[in-house]
Each structure stands twice: as C-alpha cells, then as structure tokens.
Length: 160
Length: 364
Image (cartoon, each protein chain N blue to C red):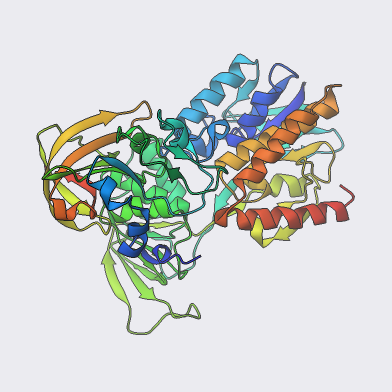
C-alpha cells in the first residue's frame, strides 16, 4: 500500500482526487467527501446515513459511497469518529464546505471565521452559514468558501 | 473476616467493567480498583470510539464508562474504589486490598480476573526529570479528569494514537501544541487522528526525537534533533523549541506484577508490548483460577479490551455454572477477530498467535 500521508498526516492531491465524485455530479449537487483512506475497524458512517448511501462489507473496508443517494445532509459528518467526512457544495458561488468541529468557542451563524487547509495553513476567511450538532456533541459547521479553494479548506478557526 | 465472591475483578477499566457487565446478575461479583473513580482510562477519553455498534462505535469513552458503570451497578456488582490490591496469596486463596484509610481487606473469589491495564513507557534524555515533563496519559488525566491545564505550550513526543489524541484534546483545552515528534519514519497512529491535528495547524515531524530538556527549575525549552535512517541523531540538525510542557507518548507496557506475584507464567512477546502473563484464547492464565483481559494481556485498544473482558467473563461463567456459553463466546471471538483485521491489527494479531503457541506449550 502506498501511504504518503503517514509521513506528515497530509492527504495530497493525488490521493484526494481519487476520492472525489465525477465532475458532472460535483456540478449538480452537494455531496459527502469521505477522506477515509486506511483500513481501520470502524463503521458508524454506514449506520448514520438515512439514505443508505454509505456501505462497507467488512468493518475494516474503506467506506463506499453511492453519490446518487447522498443528499449532503451532514449526518455522517457528525457521526464519523475520525472527523474525516466533509460536505462539499460547488454548485454555488461562493461554494460551501461543511466541516466537523469540536472546539470552543462555537462560531455563530453569520460570523466570519478563518479557513484552514489540510496542512493547517490559514488560506482565507469565510462566513458561517449553518451550525448543526449531534447527540455526541460533534458540530457540523457550514462555511462559505471561494470556489477555487473548495478542495483545500478542511477546517475553521474562530477569530473572536 | 474474609469477604467471599464468585468472581473478584481487579481493575475497573474497560476490560474489568465489560466482564462485570456479563457476570453481574449471574454470579456474585466484586470489582477492586485503586483509583477514586471507576472506568479506568475511559473516563478521560473524550474522543469518539471506532469499531462497530457492539463496540460502542461513535460513543465517547467517558460516556461508555458511565453506561457500563450504570449497568454493572444495576446488576448488583460491588464496585470498590480506592482499594489497592497488594497481592494474591495462593495458600489462603485470596487477594489483600488496602482501602483509602490504610485498612486491609481479605477478599476471596472462586475465580479472579486481573484486568490491571498498562503503564506509560518513559524515555531517557538529559534533564528528563524536570517539572513540566509528563507521560501523555498523565497530562490527559490532569486535563480531562481534574480540569487542570498542565501547561501552555507543549511538545508531544510520539505520533501513535495516544500522542495524536492527547494533542487534539490539548488543542481543545486551549493549549498551544508546538509540534508532534516521532522517531519512526512514519506516523504510528490512525491517519484520521493525525489529520485532525495537522489541519488545526500542528506540524508532525517524523524521524525526529527529543535530545534534551532545558530549564532551571522547570521546563523552558526542548532541544529536538533529526534522526537518520539508522535512528542516529544527525549533528547540526538540533533546534530549540520553547515549551513549558513536554509529553512522552512512546508506548505502553502491560502491568503484570500481580500475575508474577501470584505465580502465573510470564513470557516476553514484543508484539503484545513486552512481558505478559501466558494466557489461552479464553483469557485463562497458567493459574486456572486467574484470568486476564485488556492491556495487561497485550497492548491494544479499549474496544478489544472490552471484548476480551467479555470472553474472560463467559469462560469463568462456564466454569462456575452449568450454563452453555458456546454461542456467546464464539460471537465474541468473531468480534475480536474483526477488530484485529487490517493494517493496524497486524501486530496484536501476530502477538496473540504467538501467545496461543506459548499457551499450548504450558498445556493450556
């Protein structure tokens, strides 16, 4: 198995591009992006999805997603123990990215937050559009992201 | 006066509690633990668990502890906190436990489960006794159990799951995480744990280690150094990193003193984390009254510890009562096998295969 991310913890574009749905679908609806690349024993995403879009045969398989069934509801974002699922919506301009969030303070809707890349670099600012929370206390925060950075932004940091 | 139970469990961590949950209501059970709170490491684990539904996937450790404690109490299990077990005495067939007032208690079981867990490994470097240098688990205890921030800026040594998770929890507690170092060429923990801290701005440097700690009365800075392919420091690559906290997370060792003192056979199995009591797949040691489960039987995860606890409990139940445990125990064997598949399960899986061979050598 080629695992370049095990050196620094960063998924590079060659890995991420294989996780993305076809371009046609990306232009038509919001979708869940599963940045889950290792065969760890874990399956809560399959149970979290009310549309049965995410499946796996064996508990250490990588999750498979049926993009047609995915509605971008973000239930899997809050369920994933690895905080490895994001909702990407490139149908709008600016685009939207939903990230899992477990820090304090909590941002408020309308507030501007810093946008961070997979490398932890601050690559801009964006407005918080939506905040959801699950029973297990993981928030799903939707932020506005410049269209050209939609495949880079994977975390937020409050400015306040 | 000797207190008598069917099963005496030492350790109220995930393995001990999971065993108590199976046994409670079926036989009389007492759980002894030296700590003031039950739950072992679970109560400071604020991250969500992996696994499947039956392994509490998606639950946070602290919530699993609360659930299990409630279940075992409901089943009439006696949880005795601040009872430090001093030893097992074969002639009298009992353990002696010291309570918080220094009073000694003699407690006898028909069976015993020693689920004593593990200890953090220390690392040798100059000034490693300066205040501000902690095992990662100790710093986690201060933060998550006692609400005490152990420092303001940390260097974490070790990018295994514990180092990565504790770093993340330190970010949540408002501690500046300067960097995570690991002497290995690759990150040992799950990518998802690494990705969480990296995208929060924490660099992970593989092939780096701590050379020395710097400070007068307490830690002020850490000197780090790059390692070559033979794990030797490369001259001239030293850097000074300001930090008032240095956490060591380079692995755990099974706590086996109680087994050794009780006369159970001990063997060295590197894949299980070092010296471990010899045990068969039913978690029975070379003393037929004494069982083992969890990290004491080989370093793994809390989810596998809970399954091992259930297996030991079912095996004890089968020995004590005329009940058919076969289906239930087969189910737990399958559950354990599932958790040990994949890249990260290869070491414990290999370790347990070696252990089965050792067990048969001892006639288990």
